[in-house]
Length: 137
Image (cartoon, rainbow, N blue to C red):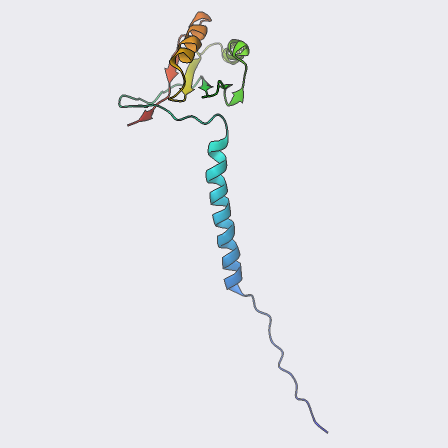
């Protein structure tokens, strides 16, 4: 009769190499995802550059974006050109004690006439604190 010896009981162990592989894959995935998704929000613009840019120090801001294909956004939301002034008046009414400063962000290839038309509309409705966004050289 043959006797089978007691088999050694092997303890379970956690393999660390596959876990590291999975963690690295997740890290790379989320980094690449964040790099591609964040700039995709809003209208993509290529800002003009200027050597005399300065930082704007104010708290009561409204951001207007002019896109290449006729897009217009107020605070990151698409808006019709006719509804822009009423949207700005609502923002001004939220804090009537502070003057609303408008930040215009336009692509460098936007027609200059569109910028002038926007300025005329804003100034004609009492919004005269207008700043333009540009890149530093």
